[in-house]
Image (cartoon, rainbow, N blue to C red; front, side, top):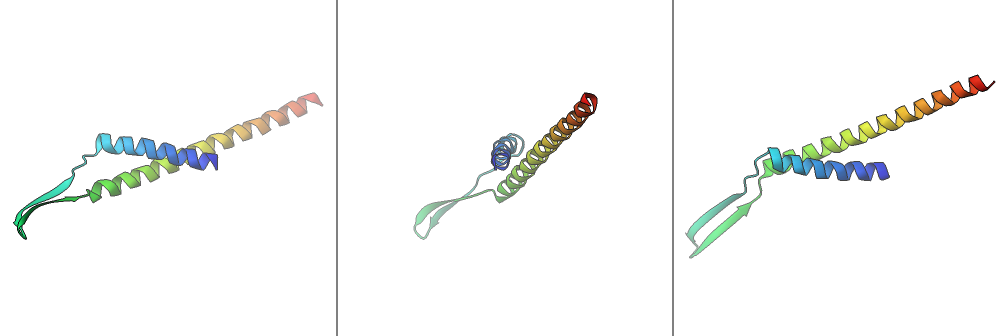
Length: 91
């Protein structure tokens, strides 16, 4: 559970940082003059930015989780191998 939470949090932080650094966020807004007797400003989100930032966060989270799992597995394998070698030398 800790590995999942930390990889998700790390992917979120790193993915959002990279998104704001390398992708251009363009806030969309329109100004309507004298529409229905008043001036209006309509703000919209940049959905391309949000979509690609979400994909980047998910990919980075999965990569962190996969690398962490790989490192843990290698540590376990080397521990077992060293344990078996020590047991053989001891007998």
